[in-house]
Image (cartoon, rainbow, N blue to C red; front, top):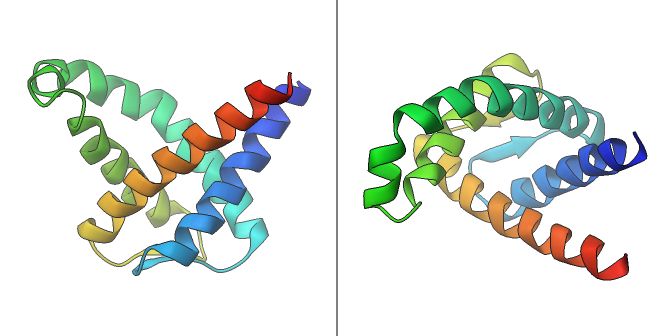
Length: 115
């Protein structure tokens, strides 16, 4: 349970960092980031999983880069559900997904190093 909460907090922090680095990717507050991280996680586990399975051949052909497109789509969808979370264009969503993936990779590395 503690690990799940820590992952949720780190995801919210990662979204805040992305909002500072990517133009057109806007999160109003930390509370909004917490809700956005929750909604993005739920959408990614449900709809994102289905999309990843359906587009598996394209993902293989692009050596996994198409996963960024799927994550960008799910981020844009999540922004439609959360007040205070706005993505102005698909380009912002794509670069936001790329930066988010890098930040989450860094967080996973740092958390695993401390264990």
